[in-house]
Image (cartoon, rainbow, N blue to C red; front, side, top):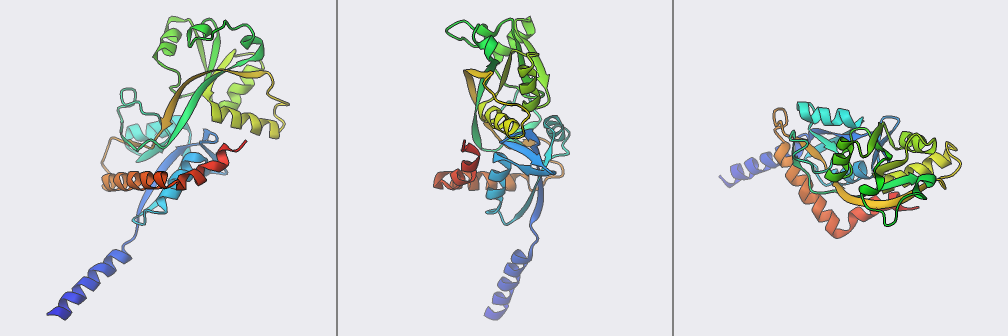
Length: 263
């Protein structure tokens, strides 16, 4: 009898060991360097690197990250054709089709930059968003940055908000004085400026000045609220959150993020 029980136990464990990992596809935005971008179709940046690192501690899952445009990523969640997308902010009222969110992954500082000729004329002290009334402020298409007061000012016509596809396009628009200012995440803006100078797309960035830190936001993995087709949803989310918190506390993730924070 003991032999039979032992054989049964052994067979059960072999089945577990031989079970194939569950394939999971997560999407990431392809135009938000250095947080999330793509090179030759491969997802790069802070968020993809964090997720890949955590996934190594999740042997039950085989995680693939596919870069897509920001608006397409949101549409994939809304339609239920995508399981998870990174890195939306926590906006449950604006995007009810995202539920749940992961634990917060990384804090981003939102700042407003202006052309130096505009910055010199701003009143002191600089008050957000009142100081920017009458100005043209660029943002990335699909990004809900700023705050309620900013968007109310835009609705009243006090501020003209102009969208462009990515940081590079917005920076060029401001250099050409087609916009007065640019509202974006400071690390992404500074990283893009350095890349543009390295590629000699701009000679320098002396004409662009950060004039005000507006707010801070955390980026998340947003999961579709439509559970059909993703029976592993709760298991994946619980395991990912647990592993993330464990590695954040141990300081392991600091080493993953560090290369992107170097000047």
